[in-house]
Length: 101
Image (cartoon, rainbow, N blue to C red; front, side, top):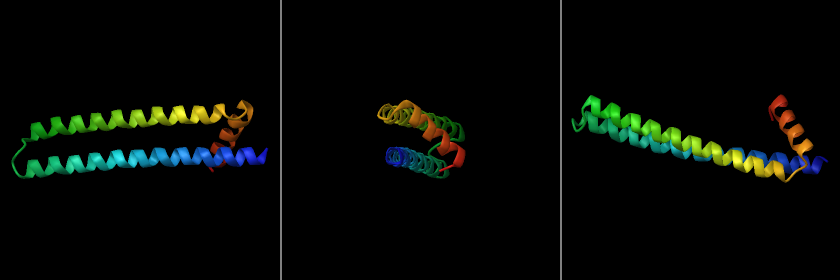
């Protein structure tokens, strides 16, 4: 049914957009924090060793945040698929990847 497919595709794309926005927000936080650390290094408030340690913590936090975003997105996609006949949702996913839409 084309109406179901269109509804599914629209909702799926919306989920992807929300995921990208969350990733963008997380990346902005990392950029802000890394700039703050750089400013502290330039001002002599942090040694290079301290900077590397703090930057590693920032990167770890970013990784954890991205992992959480991915888990949430996967849960939402599963919920979406559960609302449509299994055969159709998987066929639509295949077509979506195959034709890159």
